Image 1 (cartoon, rainbow, N blue to C red):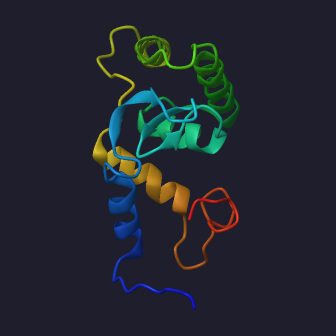
Image 2: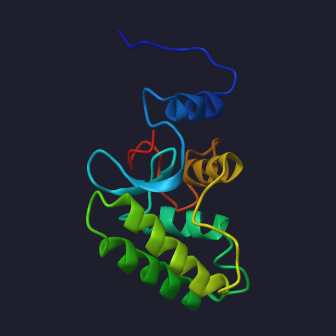
Image 3: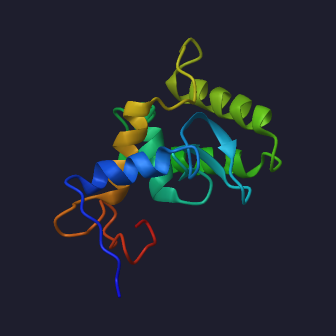
Length: 148
């Protein structure tokens, strides 16, 4: 028998579930998750998922006024920076990501590589995509790509 649930707002309930401390929790700063992947927010993999990288960097304002080609170059630059940080060294991870952010936003920026709860929720919504069709903003079914 399939267990069903009743909810009037599945997306909100799912976000609340994921952000609970017993599941993913919410962290504003980048960190390494339990399998060693650089992560931020409510478990957003910023190390190996290029689409999530785009969503996060866009929320941080890195892509404003950039062409698609520039966006991809910048995304790859951030990814290479993350990959070069030894697993588990969260202080270095934060340091190099803040430096990289200053490189693209300007040396005088006070913006840090952090994600507030509003930005985290926005990334979550982008990952889930269209709730009616089940298609994400990256064109994959949320049940197929494991997001559900």
